[in-house]
Length: 433
Image 1: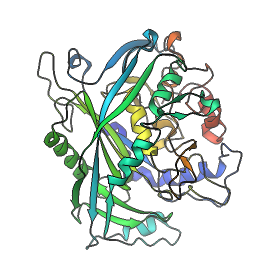
Image 2 (image 1 turned 120 degrees about the horizontal axis):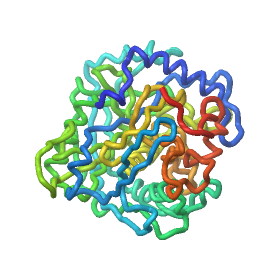
Image 3 (image 1 turned 180 degrees about the vertical axis):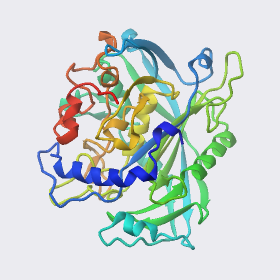
């Protein structure tokens, strides 16, 4: 896991308490207040990134379609080069990127894992069990293809009202191209046969999380090694993006169940690897980008249901994790887009970071998109909010690349700021560290 993306255990206890304070003070996008006794004691969702490719090795590379531009930050006068998926929206045009879904079926055993460490960590009388369980991403794959990730859905009117795939709608809103010929679409050309992975008892455990949902958690480094081996074995063309999909399998770090939970990551390397990849080659270098995401069940995190309804910054479910990673992959596919460092109390788990990761500042924030008929999901999909480039750029991006509304710094716009508390700060640009 990259050092700038992971917060160490010593700080996480304070974050859980901070998250409870923020939630108790927040006002939902629907106007429903959060009950004063609501305590999200089950940790903070997190997303990470892997690898990274120096821009010099992208010239002539065999990889996904991408374009590059520069902006000058008005606060520092520093010029930043930015590379994104697709084509320059100022020139129009439609780009379709091929993907393949690799469903993972993960088997967990109930052995001699010691889950007692979670009891005091979660508190409120929680007792962690351990369950022999199988989480099969096969059914999740068909759900994802029918979801807003790959199918066109009508977005809310106050968010632009576009009819498009989720990532395409985000990019079009980010650059004021709603209704234009500009598109960045995904086309899943193949769903691979399901890959079965047996999780050793020293690399993971399945248990009922405090909000009630059964989940499997696997060691981050061990899991990532399985994915890298799979990418090499499957020999996926670097112009195609593999999406590794689990059903309710999250990740923990540092051999500590409390250091949890990562719901997804995206990465890039040349050739495929955990690090930055090889620096050899003169053009036509294969540069592989990839995504992992968990298809989340209701009540994986507290806040999916409360006495006053679902919280707009806690109701994580279905494609929430994948939407986060797709949007971040679109804006930073090669993990090399630097920005003036930012810090926000809405996502303290990321600390002070200087990377363009559109979902991190609003991690866990979502909006309801009608169309999910699966029982228990309240009839809606749960895609994540995203932060527009102009927030990171302190409004320094070219005027021709401004969002669909100049006053918006997130995809959800006023829905984000109306959550209240520190979320109100998304009515203006990022602050420094």
